[in-house]
Length: 453
Figure 1: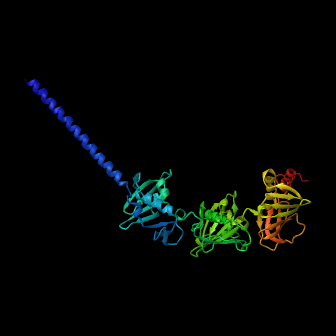
Figure 2: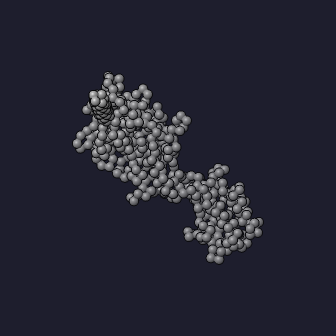
Figure 3: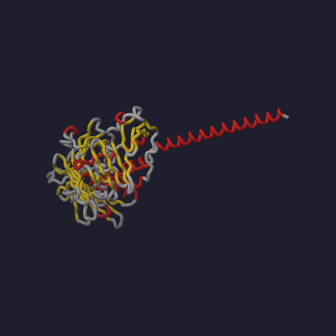
């Protein structure tokens, strides 16, 4: 009986050893898990509600700023003021609020750029969080940082660090104007020191005709469109703050400048250079911020605008259904027409035609070809004296009585428009008067349709 007892005791001892080994492994894993958890926790730099932050203090490139949000916008409340990129402050708060490092190092802070770091301190009503940002790692994968309450050196992914850039280049608004499209009430454009265009709104915020061009017709939606465009222009590069020499950028003799006034009476002054390099970019000097930036040339082409850019696209005389007749002298011809709109009849040099059907359609196309002319430009000067008109059209029975329209050639593509013998200031295209799909072409087709030579 001894051998079974001995065998049984051996099994008990072996089982005990196995249990002991298992418990030892289990305890070791617990210790390792706890250590890993503690290590992971040690890499958590910040964890707070980003919306609780109400103030930031930033030191970078020798400048110090305090940024707060007294109303709807973040503004610099201490330090040299400049317009803040609102979304970027949101990025800083968001990235810092849940910031975890990937590794911790020992070493000399100077080797990691942490002897003179850029610094941001974020405040809420209860506490503050300070982050010191050093240099980028050699592989560009990480930024080295530490915090105000921990002396270690930590690596954070550069995607996070790139959203913690703290210099003016990152913080400044990327808009060239701080006005919204609803704020702007006046523009003054200048070239070579001379005013080229003045636009302003009335007391209700509606755009008026350009100053000095009140007699012309305008598409006021073009002024609103320009304002929308200007307030949405994005700066491509922050070039130089407090520039010592504007001539480096061609801004000592700019292509043009504009003064923009807001509804609150504040004014912004912007200078724009000639395009540089491959002409894709232009330098822009934001006078009130003493800042040179660069923008796409196509975005700042508004500096070349004149009153003509806001004019209605066409000059249109009285419609045929609002007159009783007309005479037309052009290309060596003198033709006379009567219009009886009540009975849908007309005559051309005594030959009657219907204002309906094919003849009516041909007439309407012919009439439009010389009474609806594309505007090339506007001229608010005295203009030339009328002589040797290329075309004369006398309209009868308009609501304003008889009106005489005359064109005098300016060049081979445009003409000065005179109304009742007075220079109108409109310079119109003459391309619709001759050639295919022109006055001559459509008049010939109309005459053919009614049998008039």
